[in-house]
Amino acid sequence: MLSISFDTWLANHEEDHDAKWCRELYPWEVFAALDYSQTAIGTPQDIQSSSGRFTAKVQHCFIGNNGRTNFLIHLKSEALSPSQRWRNRQWDEVFQVVATPDGDFITLFTKEQDPSKGLLRKFMAGGLEQIEAERSVPISGMLFRSLISYVARDIFGSLKLSSTLGTCQARGRPTVGDQIQEAQPFLRSGNDFWIMYGFTEEKAHRIAIANSANCKKLLVVYCHPTFTKHHRCAAINANVISLSELLGMGSAAVRARYLPQLRFLMNHLHFDETISESSTELELRTRILSGAEGRIEIKTSELREAKAGLDRAIVTKGDAAYVLACANLLNAALNRKLRLYKGTQELEKDVYSFKAHLSRCLEDLIRNTPDSTELYLSSEDLILVRINGIQLSFHAVPRTVALREYALSSRNFPQAWSGARLQPIAPLILSWARALVREEGPVHT
Image (cartoon, rainbow, N blue to C red; front, top):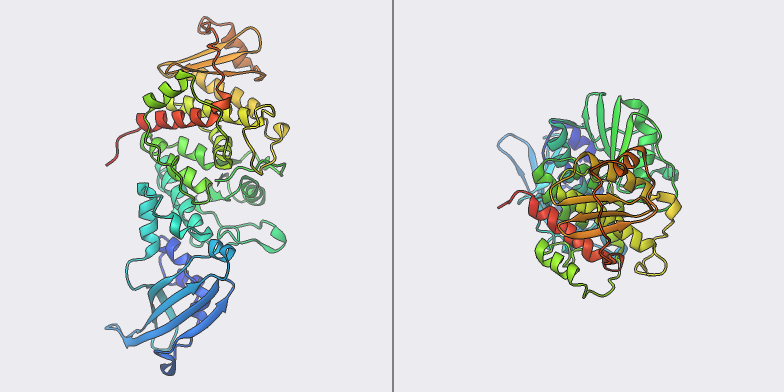
């Protein structure tokens, strides 16, 4: 068969075809290598590729009502290692290939409902536990793109999906020499506004550096924060933000509903009991105020969440609690005396200087102080924030002009420090903040 490839599929379909992301995940090189001749029908064909080992059988060939040639193919994949299983989607499906009478490829789809669409529906509805069994890099990329698209359109309105995702960086594959090249935008409004993405913060900055000159305004979204030193895009028309920050820019429904999905993506599609937390804000607050909790170790997934979550704009009480809980967890992870973080990430305080970022968060809190939220800047070095009765404390936070002005104003009502040290239970504080975000969002059925 001639020209069977994802690029040909793209050329044969409308730019906004809703199946584009699912089709991208198909093992196109396997279908291109199959023998479609009459003598091959019914005979298993073994194909080895970089994606693994495949067994394919052309089960049936028939002419459709429109005169096109159709092939039904059962395809089953076998990963040769755990690494190969993680890096490649696994298949056990019947596909239908459609071609012209002359043998030119037209389209390819699964005979039954596309399993990728089912996974996407589960993901957006919060059925995360069901996705873990099929976790892989391609599925993670599809879910990441889908969430960006949904949230971006909620924030910015109608945006056009690029005519092709056909760049190495868009598909999550390394480029030659691992250099980021100029690429098509993911979503766009002409050349006025582009949205692109890179899974890691470092890659997102490199994409921004390579593409900021191609449009008037560029937004690049990342999922995984990078903790080591890396090049950062300094272009004034480019903004690199975390997926957490993008969610925080959305409507009330978006701000609360998709936090579990974000955490699931950050955790490499691993589901654990903390992602779908059932404890209420009141229950968690009671545990915290009891003072009976012991030290809690910090997970790498929580560390990633905290660094990315610090970017969330403070609009509601839940936002304030979440941002400050993220700052508290980063503080705890950096505290060498506590030794609560024992993961593999190298934490260099001077690299990402989160306390300078915390200054900007406190400025947000000054501009928009939600109910049951109190901020006190002492004349010394102490900053206290009380939210729903939980008091968080911070030291050595740079005093910006706005913070100094607030400290001298009548709004700066004194607080006495409660004496409660929240760094040792930082993961519990973050769980409490998530519950507050979840409960202030709209109810979904």
